[in-house]
Image (cartoon, rainbow, N blue to C red):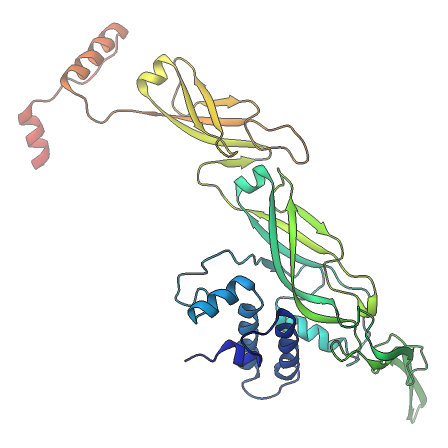
Amino acid sequence: MARDLYEVLGVSRDATDDEIKKAFRKQARKLHPDVNKSANAEEEFKELNEAYDVLSDPNKRAYYDRTGSTPGASGGGSPYGTGYVDFEDIFGGGFGGMGDIFSSFFSGMGGGGTMRREGRDMGVGLRLTLQEVATGAKKEIVYDRLSPCQDCGGTGLGEGGKEVACPDCNGSGRVYTVQHTFLGDMRTTSSCTRCGGTGRTIDNPCPECEGQGRVPDRQRVTVEVPAGIRDSQQLRITGFGEAGLRGATSGNLIVTCRVQPHEFFEREGDNLHARASVSMIQAALGVETEIEGILPDEKVSVRIPEGCQNEQVIRVRGKGMPKFRSDLRGDMYVHVGVTIPKKLTKSQRELLEQLAKELGEDYANPRSRLEKLRDAFN
């Protein structure tokens, strides 16, 4: 049987959200493959991350407490929307999940190279239905990032702590080494490993963030999607990317909208294409018909003209998609399909034969029962 999720995190069943977060970060620092060199390090960290994924979400945690199983474990999927999104590594953030977040966290602890003070932009892809795009929507996004540390307010300072010049590089952020060779002394310059090239270190750093002023965390943010947004169009949420080092400027969250195909409508810019079926009589005589619109409970009246042909396209003005940041709408183009009856009664056939004679059109005479029987055997 799978281990109890509370046991994996090392917390009680009545632990608060804050206690769960801190327990996860404490365990992750021990089990992450970057620091844990045991053979099963990846599996242990994966188990820890899955436990946190459930217990950090109020809905998932309630479901687990009620049933003893994780949402979707039976193969039926989660009983509610997760709110998660597709992560897009296109802005230099390099984050694809909590594991990558911790890798970035460890690399920012003076482990070599130059630390970047400003936070990087992060990108996520948000799935939207065409109806949500037509009306506008508020969507909650859940993603992992380096967030400002709540314990120290993002300063990186512990109780009585202070930021001082790095003793190894005297505040320059660079160290110099001299190598004696037969060609003479060679002087090289490199980034200070102790301060990560910042020139500053912390006396008595915050124990939660280890002096960085930021911690790996799961972030929830509500995105307001305006009506009429296009597929692949991006929204910028200022300050919700990677948090900066010790209070430096945070990056931005770039949300790329992914509009899903619709079963009935096809979008072309601000216009919509739809289909409507009419009988051959309605196509010949003309008819007023209704089809569903893209907005909730919307009915679109379509006037089928007399003599309408199969696949004829009828334009209905102002019934397409709402235009981005505008009160106007595009148009709807209705593609008409004319349906032909497959079977006719005797009287219906006689009426059509009479019409054919008046129009001077040829038609096939009805086959006898013997001919139909012969065709069936053949």
